[in-house]
Image (cartoon, rainbow, N blue to C red; front, side, top):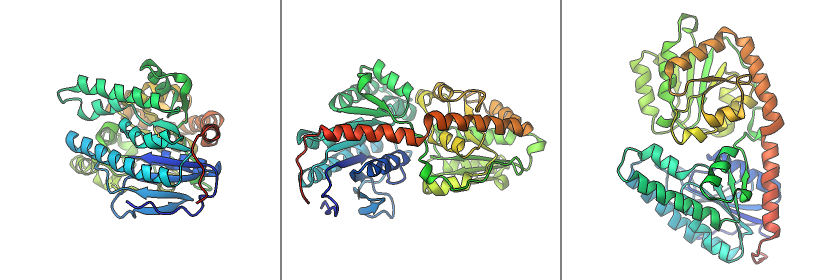
Length: 410
């Protein structure tokens, strides 16, 4: 694993990102990389390698290093663990080489897995500052995927221990919203070291002049990972329940994942195939937003699972930023960020409630547009990415100014 030269490593501030995920498909990582570059950091990203990806590439000024591990969505528990362990091992070796050649000021590790923090230990010993970015609570994610297996309590205890250890090793912890910050505090993490950087949408990827949402034709959209716990089967069942006035409505699902085939089969069995499109393809964020703009309503159908009680989807902010009315599952974290005057909530897990809520949007679309305007106003006042990027860049600058990494001239 040869580390390629970085042509611009004369600058003072260097950041190394480590993520078990595809880049730039992981939009949170991509947003933070853009913010770091704007703040003057040279950035290396160490990531997985998807089909057709090159081992090394420069994207937006960041040098991307893709290791010979690919993500397998919907894998069983053994494959899941092996993939995480293999990536962590390869990342540890690769990042060590980066650190010895051109020492970063900061290494940022994105979970899951939490034990990926091991890949940053040598740079930390050499003086780099360490950020641990908590995308999800690993114990809750494990319970969602493998909760029906024996040994769950033991796995939960181990994962919480590793999570706490990773947070203690870090100089700063970043997470996606305030409920996660509070939960980390309940788990023994010092909340004073935890910074919230919301998964709001980078305005740079929005269409320059997005089309306004329209009632006619009535387009229901979802975009993102297509996996069972996000409740896409619920959307299909609700769509089948919509009454005659919405018989011409369409449902568009953009994204890839382990539930694509099941959804397509379910749409066929319900007789909905002519009006349901499941593209089954991972597209660049800007392209997806171009496709969903102008939709009548965007759906956040998350099931009421242990993990989803904390879920705050990027797609929610994207719909709001595009002015699209939103229908969302009534779950604590979603409700803590928007009110009934801004988006409509349905009973989480209920196809009947979702169908009724979608129908109410169509019945009074002027009211839906008014809620969308109120949600957009809140977004710009409190959640927009510019505000999050400023907080994140300030953290990077503070840590870099206190880094003990040695300087190299090239």
